[in-house]
Image (cartoon, rainbow, N blue to C red):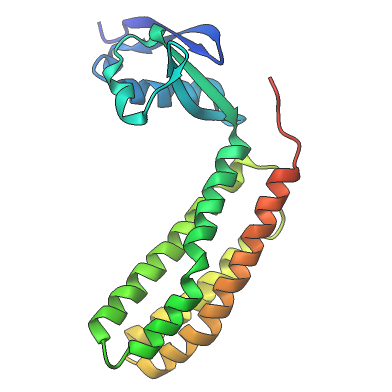
Length: 206
C-alpha cells in the first residue's frame, strides 16, 4: 500500500523520539533521514550540529554506515550558530578579494585567459556569499539592511557584467577596481556586523 508508514526511533539531544515516514523513504540513506528529522522537528529554531554513536562523535562520512537510527543521538544547536559559522566562511572568502581584484586588473592584458578565469571564480564566490546571507537571514532575528546591501553589491556586479558583455573591457576594469572593489569591502564590513549581532542575540535554549 502506498499509504503504509513505518515508525522510526532516534534520540535528539539524548531524548528519544519516534516519527513516521512513508514507504517512499525505505531506501533513503541515514543522512537523508536525518535531514528529514531536522526539517520536521528542529527547523527553524535548531539545526543538527553532529551525530553521536555510543557517545562518540561520528565523522559525516560514517553516518550512512549506520542503518539503525536507534543507535544514534542527534546533537543540535541553535540555528543562529550554524548561520554564524556560514557567514564567517563567507567572510573568509571575501578576505582575499581586494587583492584578487588588483591582480586581475594588473594581469588583464598580459594573462587574459587566467585573469578572466580568476574574475569568473571571484564573481561566483561573491554570489555564494550573497546566497549564504540571504538564506541564513531567514533563520535570524530581524537584521535591518540586508536587502539594501545585497542590492548595492549586485548593482556594481551588474554594471561590470554589462560592460564586459558590450566588449568595453577598459571601462569594465575601471568599474571592477573602483565600484566592485568598494562594494566588496562594504559587504565585508556589513557581514562582520551581522556576526557581531548574532553573537550578541539571545539564543533559544531547550
